[in-house]
Image 1 (cartoon, rainbow, N blue to C red):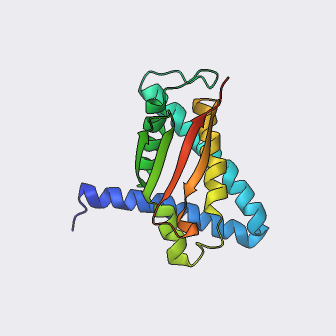
Image 2: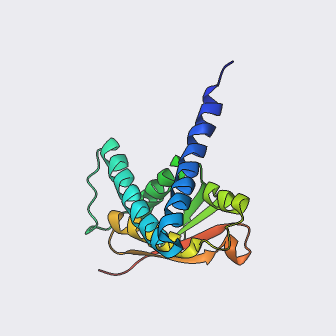
Image 3: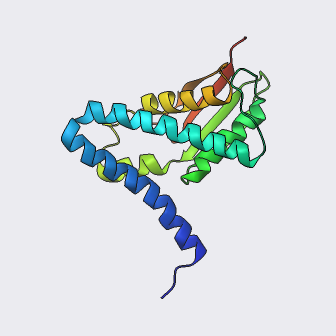
Length: 166
């Protein structure tokens, strides 16, 4: 018997979402949905901040949320975070200087669907909270707005990242 590198990678990606889901369900039994969701959001905000800082160090970059980060770099960081868990994304900088970020495959949403919880878990609120926090780690002038959502019936999720004047 053998496991090739591609199979091992699929196991790793699946383990990340499985551990998160199992942890959430176990905690939900003891604390209820609302308290568990609140704790889950804090964990994921911190997880992303730590990963962003690690990716920055790997690239010999000192993150400074007080400075404007080029949107191409923001796309790199958000894309790297997405790739870690197997999320398939694309992004582009618009002519008006905004970042359009699109998620075509989300393993988290697929797991929720397989468990019949895709309507219970408020994906947009979660992503607004988590990605909003992550954007603040990169550049404090950035905000995001959902433009498409699988929970609204769209075939993908997307948001626009904008920079507020400092």
